[in-house]
Length: 416
Ligand code: GLU
Image 1 (cartoon, rainbow, N blue to C red):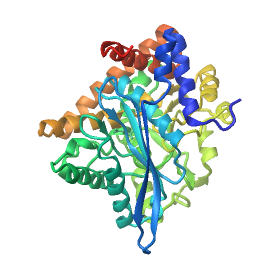
Image 2: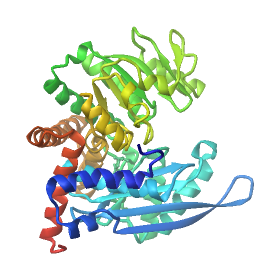
Image 3: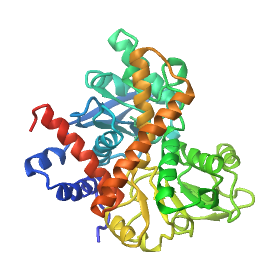
């Protein structure tokens, strides 16, 4: 039993499993169990009421053997350094599984963006970059959006960095608005990548996706796009969705676009017409074919793992399932498409954005979709064949694929 596990310890536990299977040298293990650099900053922001608030921020640079650090920035009231360390660790393996020339990093600021004005958010975003401008860069560390940050914030951050350096630097950040160097297809890339993974998984599991039911916990960028794409591309039935305030259920299926409009208008999903209100906990335990945890970490634990009734868990969020739950679900025959594979579509298209910024030559949407499909399908197949060969779950297998790649890069650089 794990109780409330620290996320960084959870990331290390997941890593340890793959180290054991790979029979990895203990010296190399100790390098890979900790971040290379951890930066703490205090960002002063003059609020609309005239007071100055000091916001605590972080950037963790986990490993850059494969290339520049890469990973999002979160704005969240419950942010902690250990969460950011875990997320930077996961980014390292995510980029490696997806075969990207990037290492892993992550950033965060402790704040409540939902209660801040646009002006305050802009000051905070620019302040974050002012304090980190020597630590990031197109060939050093490339941030991106994550929980409660978006393309508008990325635009301000890129502008601030460019002003400090005196040159236009679109490649310093991905997930920007298209008019200043963003990529076509970045907005729904995380969900689209997950769609391709689900499609590949369905071939192994003999599932007919046009005849499947889906429940989605979290209706932000990833979750809402997942609902829309599952229905549009496969004709799956989205029977339940939820956000932090609670969920809604209709056994005959919901209209994902209608639900999104309702959420914008009412700031909540509750009382959506033609649906029953349910709790987040109830949603996770519904009898559906596919469950997509798409919000925050740590929602599937040893407490609810035995009650989960789906066949497949597609992890759009980072770290939704803890290691004890992983074991229970593996034994119960539930297939988990792990976060570092399932949600890698976001960083894959971030990579395409960075390539386009460096070349100054921009791709049509179709090329983004085709390349994303190819890149993530290859990653899925690599992970699946490693899992079959070793009779292990897809998470441990994804870690093994990733760790092998990073270790090879470390060896080639002469680090170990
Ligand atoms: N924040 C996203 C993730 O966790 C995207 C990162 C990126 O695009 O660099 O994968």
